[in-house]
Length: 264
Length: 264
Image (cartoon, rainbow over all chains, first blue to last red; front, side, top):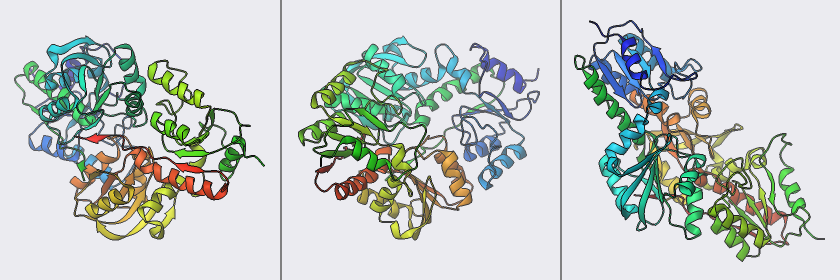
């Protein structure tokens, strides 16, 4: 029996409750197309799409949008050579592109958060799962030691932190993507009494400034900023493994984006 | 004649056209209070406010909010020990806190952008001033060389960049604060044909991903991400100098926030 794009999408969206508003869906391609190979990636970059085409994967499952915007899925609001070249690649390869963002975050627990917790090696330390964060009671270690572990396990060349590198951290909140805002993290510091938040990305004037003031007031708090991609790629790697188990007859490729920035 | 908080605010807001909606205004203190000293700072941190109090500056002019939020000026939406300690400092010192964000960006040209252009040493290269960006035709130099100049002149210990370090940049857009979004920068790449954008902060999935794709397509583009504070502190330093000229009878202190993050 042939596996269609629609049946893969159905399987992926089934574990989450249905959402009225979502960015998720088939952006390019046809739902009735037969799937010959799947490529899973955090960001469907020009390079990742070329890799997928080269691997014969005609269904790409990507967490973020292809056109530098959370909401503009097809790049229709802009026309320029970068957009046109990328669209031509997608259309000429005849690939289906499935944006899979909101539903995977609505898995219980959030599969993107689970992926990060897993790669950090913190599953056995998780004491609470909130919709936006996993709370982990860690074997007490210095902020520096925890940052080094995160760098090594996630393969991140550098990490931005706030706090005394030697300060002891014993309770952490783990947040993926753009959940680093103060409205999300400050309640975790104040209600869950975490001494460390680890997040992907967030406004610089919110969480980091809260922690900077807390430190100036003599309160021991810390922040580790992983980067947006670095925090969510583990969830997409976990998804790729699950998909391969669910569809053993189809090759499932887990594609990796290179680090976004270089440090100078 | 005594100088009141109100007269300083009036002088600061006068150069910009009046705004219907603004976050700017007197957050703490009294408009009729006599000003004995002024402290100007990008972020009114716990430490900066303590410094201001120690210097006898009873009017603090800050670009960002004191309570980790763009809109919540007084921290009234949250109650926790970090907020309470900071509020107590402000109230016990009896200082007036003037949030000066929107109006300074509406100066013509935007004084925050001008401050950054000035500290980069690029004033003589500016060929166009748009409301959101200054466009500069630079003596061609490598991305790496330009990043090194920015680090040195702005006193930034590290800078995140995208692009080949050796690629030649000759036309740059300079954007402060959170103007690093794709909706702002992509038109500058496509309409102004800049080969470099220098900005404070922006969503990681927008501008950097556009540039990553452009690079993969063989187009020479680059990004330098200064950090939000690093991009706007120069404008506040420029403001402090102008204020001191305008009010020579009052001490005007330009306070510096330490770098927000450390790199590990």
